[in-house]
Amino acid sequence: METTTNTQRATTVRWPRWAAYAAAAWSLLYGGLGLYWALGGVGFPFGEGDIPDARAESLLGASTAAGTAPVIAALGFAGAALALIMARVRPGGAALAPTTARVRSRDAVLALTTARVRPRGAIRVAVLATAWLAAFTLVGLIPDARVLTAVAYAPIVLVGLPFGWPDVNYFEVALPWPVLNLILCLAGGVLWAGAALAFQRRTGDSCGGCGRSEHRSATWTAPASAARWGRWAAYTAFVIPLFYAVIRWAWALNIPLLFSEEGLRWLHQTGLVWAGAALATLAAGGGVLTLGLVHRWGEVWPRWVLGLRGRRVPPAFPVTFASTVTVVLMSAGTEAVRITKWSDPVAWMSSPMTYWPIWAVALGVATLGYHLRRRGRCRHCGLL
Image (tube, rainbow, N blue to C red):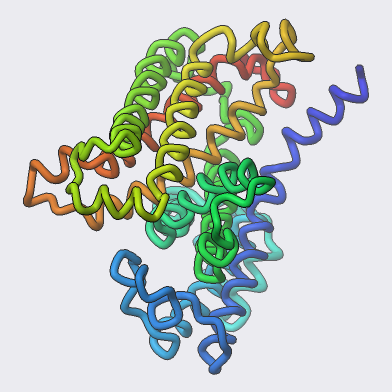
C-alpha cells in the first residue's frame, strides 16, 4: 500500500517537470520536419500535399511547401526554445527581464535555459498567452473533422473486421499520412497545453499537481459547486449527440430528414448509410456514458459490469477517456465553425455539425466538474 501511495505522489509531482521538455521535443521534431519539407523533402501534408477533396475544408488548404514549410520550421524551433525556457523556470529566483537585459543576443537562449528565473507581470502573461495559443492552434485550428472520423470509425472497423465489413481499407481511407499528421499536431497541442498549465501553476504560487494555493481559494472549484455546473454541462453533452443520432437513424430507415431523397438513395446504394447508423449509435452511446460524470455509476461500477461491479471507478479512467474525446471533438467543432454558412439560419440550425463546438465545450466542462468532485486531498500539497 505504501509503495502505491509513493508512486502516485511521484506521478503527481513529476508531470509538471517534464511537460515543457516534452513540448520542446515535439516542437524540435516538427520544426525539423518543416526544414526537411522546405529543402524539398517529400511528404508535405498540407495544401498541395493534402488529399484533394479535403483542401477546401482545411485551414491550410491553400498552402505550399515552398511558402509554408519555412514558417513551420521557424515556429517549431522558436517553440522549442520557448518551451525550454518555460521548463527551467522555478519558483523564486531573479526576474526574467533583468536577466535578458544582461546577456548578449547570441547567448540569450543559452543563458535563459540554464538560469532558474521567474517571470512576472507582462512577461509572464506574454509567455502564457503564447503557450496557450500554440496549444489551441495545434488542437483546434490545424486538425479538422478527419481526426474525428478516423477515431469514430476505428471501433466500427474492428467489430466488422471478422465479417469483412466495411469493404474498404481503413488505413488508406481514414488514416493516410495527411490525417496521421493532423493527429501528430493534435498530440503536440496536448503537450503544449500541459506545458502551459504547468508553467501557469509554477509561476502563480500554485501546487503543480492540483493547482490549489494556500493564498487564495476559488468557490467554483469546490466539490458542491462543481457538481452543480458539471450537471448542466453533462446533460448538454448528452443531448447534442442524440440530435445527430436521430438524423442518421432516420436515414437508415429511408427517411430523408434534413437531407435530399437523391442523396439518401446514394447512401443506401453504396451501403454507407449503415456505417453512418453505426456511427450514430456510437455517438448516442457516448452521450449516455457522459451521464456517468454526474451519476453514481460513474463512481462505482454498476452491477451489469461483470468482474468490476461494486468496485470504485478510478477517477483517471473516465477523465482520460472523456478528455481525449473532448480534444478530438474540438478539432472537428472548429472546422464546423469555419465551413458553416452562417448567412442561412435554416441550414446551420438544422445541421448537427453546427453544435459540435458546444458539444466539445460541454463535455470538457463536465469532465472538469467530475475531476474537481473526485480529486480529494492533494497528495503533494495536502490541500483539500
